[in-house]
Image (cartoon, rainbow, N blue to C red; front, side):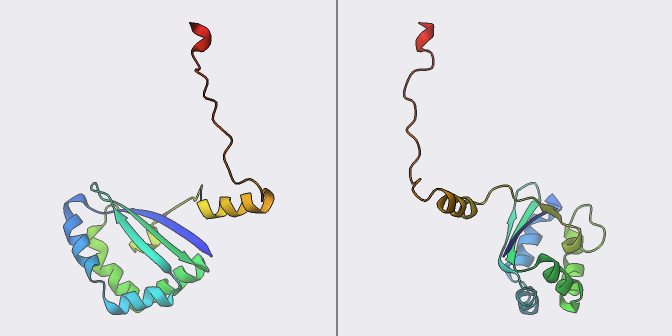
Length: 134
């Protein structure tokens, strides 16, 4: 499974409209996203218009290709186009993909595989770091 996180920018003056349109995404578009192989898909919106998206899929390439060929997705992207800042072409294809640098479950699995008995954190040093300066 691949985890994909991306960012786009929404016009800060159009945030309410963006929220309104996503409160009831067209049923056909929801099914198209599902058919593309995307799961656990979420969008997060910051007050300044930064939009962060996240989804999981077996193949990001196949999912993107499916949506690129989809008439429903093309119509949805056209419907949404006026809400994005600095967009050239379809917003879904211009999104900046973010690098994943940490995933808790992956690191726990790695820890359990290589250090099966390491279940606790070493005790913290309670000594005063300024003790020698007194």
